[in-house]
Amino acid sequence: MIIGIDIGSTTTKAVLVEQGTVIQRIKTRAIDAVTSATGAFGKMVLENNIPMSEITRIAITGVGASKIKGSIFGIPTEKVDEFTAIGKGGMFQSGRDNIIITNIGTGTVIIEARKNEINHVGGSGVGGGTILGLSKKLLQSTTFSDIMDMAATGSLNQVDLLLEDIIGTDLSFLSREATAANFGKMLDSAKNEDIARAIINMVYQVIGMLSVFAARSKDSDCVLVTGSGSDNAIGKKTLEEIARMYQIHFEFPAGAEYTTAIGAGLSAVDAL
Ligand SMILES: Nc1ncnc2c1ncn2[C@@H]1O[C@H](COP(=O)(O)OP(=O)(O)OP(=O)(O)O)[C@@H](O)[C@H]1O
Ligand SMILES: [Mg+2]
Image 1 (cartoon, helix red, strand yellow):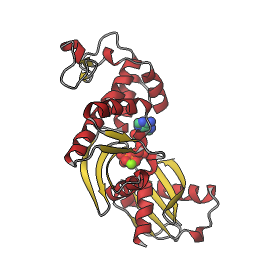
Image 2 (cartoon, protein in one colour; image 1 turned 90 degrees about the horizontal axis):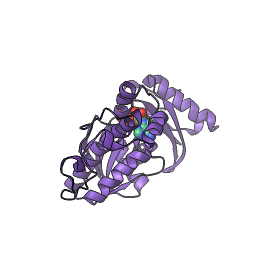
Image 3 (cartoon, helix red, strand yellow; image 1 turned 135 degrees about the horizontal axis):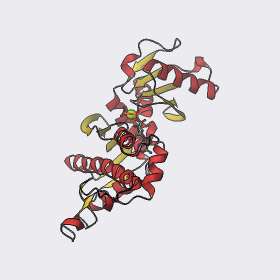
Image 4 (cartoon, protein in one colour; image 1 turned 180 degrees about the vertical axis):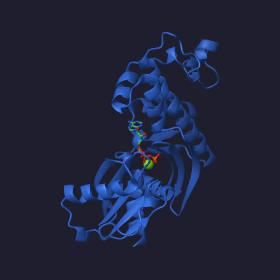
């Protein structure tokens, strides 16, 4: 058995891989890299009653991977490049060997994955961390569930300048409700609920458009959305509106936050 560990900027994810199949997943909050990796390893082993002798190696990826040196409790570790891990994990989860992957974590990265080639297309510092940071200052809210609850009843037209505000009609393939400028209206009557909605909308519009351009540049019309930001009901709606306008398709795999850890575990399998 192999344990794949992804030490991300905010959370650490671990998966247990056996013969190319993912059999367990766990998540912990990232503190420092060493505590995260050993903690994730310990949690995986103890919670699933796995004898240490059955784990042959630990594959580590993510921003904290470079801090892990040598073995963990006598089990050899190996580093897997994060872009490779996202690419392999994305191909595994989509069941395709040619796919664009947009990984929404603390920040966002876009990868082109093909059977024998994985490329870093680009990315953005706009991601889950942006939603949390802006919400802390603008809404005095620091948990994702509070932000989502607020945003559920918010209205964009209190905060965003919409096309209907400036031209009153549809424009090209954009509907009159489309955003012309994020935060460009900001009425005095805007409530926290409206601002929460607008923050999430802005983040997913940016990510959605980058994904469209990435997909088009690679002649693809399908984008797999991974990372913790894949599982966001409001963000998904924003991405789906973009998908309709630009005729592309977003896929949201189950267990999307584990994609990078899965890719690390599978890379070690590949290398055996
Ligand atoms: N439902 C959600 N929608 C959007 N973002 C979310 C959601 N839940 C958590 N987040 C945010 O996602 C981020 C963590 O996601 P993830 O674990 O994929 O990132 P990471 O691997 O730690 O970061 P990175 O890959 O950028 O190094 C945090 O910023 C968190 O606030
Ligand atoms: Mg990550």
